[in-house]
Amino acid sequence: MIAHPVRLSNPRRAAAPWDAGGVTSLRARALAISRDTRIRFLAVGATNTVIGYGVFALLQLVAFRDVPFGYLASLVLSYAVGIAVAFVLYRRFVWKVRGNVLVDLLRFIGVYLTAIALNALLLPLLVEVAGLDPLLAQLVVLVITTLVSFFGHSRFSFARPPGRD
Image (cartoon, rainbow, N blue to C red; front, side):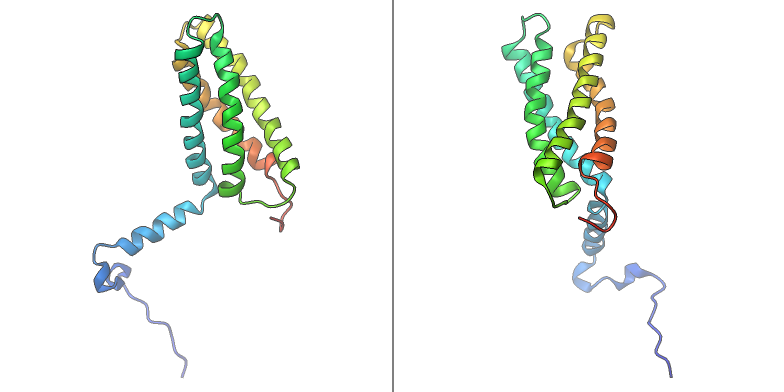
C-alpha cells in the first residue's frame, strides 16, 4: 500500500489555532517577497535615495542656496554619500555576493559615474531649460537613474558567472 500525502482543499483552514489571523501566511508572503532581488533593490534603493536626497536638499537649502549652479555641488556631494551607503547595502543585502571587494567597488563606482553623468546632464536641462525647481528636477531624474543603476549593478557591478556567489 502506497501512502499519499494528505491534501487540504482549503490551505487557510490548515492554520494553527494560535494563528487564526493568518500571521504565519503573512510572514511567509513577506519572506517570499524579500527573496526577490528586485524588491530588495528597490527597498535598499529607496533607503539610499532618501538619504541621498536628504543630503542633496540639506546642502542645497543650507550651503549652496545662493551659489550659482550650487545644485551641482549638492549633487556631487550627495552622490559621494550615496555611493558609500549603497555599495555596502547592495553588496550585502541585495546581491549577497562574495569575492573581490575592490573589483566590485570599482565596477560599482563605474555604474554610479554613469548615473551621475546622466544626472549631471539632465539636471541642468530640467532646471535651466525647462525651468523646474532643482529639488523637483532631481526627483524626476532619480527615476531614470534608478533604472540605469539597477541594470548596471545587476549585469556588471555584482554580476557573477553562473554557479558562483
